[in-house]
Image (cartoon, rainbow, N blue to C red):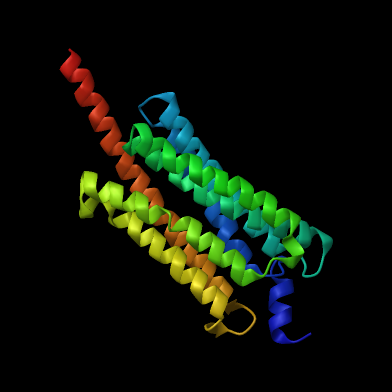
Length: 236
C-alpha cells in the first residue's frame, strides 16, 4: 500500500479522512450552536420553526457528507450515502432560505420565494434519486448553483430593506459556496496528493459558507426581535 492509501485507511479507517472529519466535526458544532439558536430565540413559533428547519437541514447535510466520505470506496453503503449526500444539498439550500424569509419579510415577499425554492428542492431530490446513475456531476453542480443563486433575488430584497452592511454575510456565504463548487468541478488544486485536494478545499468552502449564512441569520434574528420589542412597547 502506498503512503497516501496507508494514511487514508489507517486514519480511523476513514476512506476520505479530511473530507469526512471536517464535516462530521462541523455537524457536531451545528448541533450545539443550533440548539442554542433555537432555544434562545424570543419570537413566534413560525419563525422558530424556520430556524429548526435551517439547523436540521444543516446537520443532515454535514452528517450525510461526513459519513459518505467515511465509508470505503465502491462499497454499497457509500453508494447509498452518496444518494443521501446529494439529496441533502437540495434540502440545505432550501433550509437556508426558510428562516431568512420568515424573519425578514411578510406577505408575498415571504412566501413566493419559499414556495418556489421548496418545490425546486423536493423535485430536485426526486429527480436526482431516480436518475442518479445517469446524472453528470457538472449538471448537478450547475443545478445547485442556480438554485442557490435564487438567493441573489433575496439579497436584493434585503439590501433594499436594510442596506449593504446588513446583507454582506449573505453575499459572503454565496461567494464561498460558489467558489468551492467551481473549484470542485475543475479539480485544479492539490495540496497533498490523495489527502487534501480540490474536494477537501470544497468542504472547507462549504463550512465557510455555512458560518457566513449562520451569522446572517443571527443578524436577522436580532432585527426581528428588536422589531417585536418595539411593537410590544408601542402597544403598551
